[in-house]
Length: 177
Image (cartoon, rainbow, N blue to C red):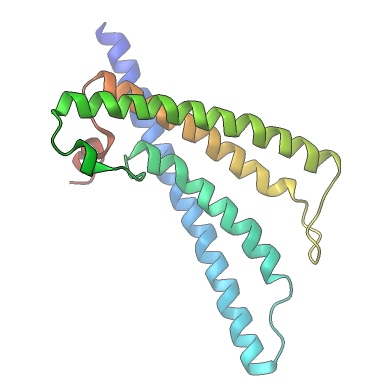
């Protein structure tokens, strides 16, 4: 049983670390979007020529960045919760409800992964591109699909932690403190 627990702990720890670094990568993408927007506004103000295609870059980049944050939000317990309903409950009930939430989270992530995979197949097959830069749209699907897979793994890690009587936000606080 100890070997199974240690494998589970390794899976949870590895998943948490991958999700953290993936989210930081999403932050880099978001920072890049801000930089492109700042340059575009400055160029528009100074020489009346904004960066062409900013909208399509922001559209793709924002989607990528947001999806890259999802796994970390799940694994760290940072998703939106309604604590007002659980404030008076015993800790073990809260952990149980967290486990139920993780179960639904993994099901939702797998559903989204399935449907986004179908979308990926379509945009890849028809070679859809952005209007100005002609960037293949399927490029954006790759990090989104990876994010959804990590989201499912993060929810499974939360389920393992719930089984161990742990809440993800407590684990996160212990790791950063």
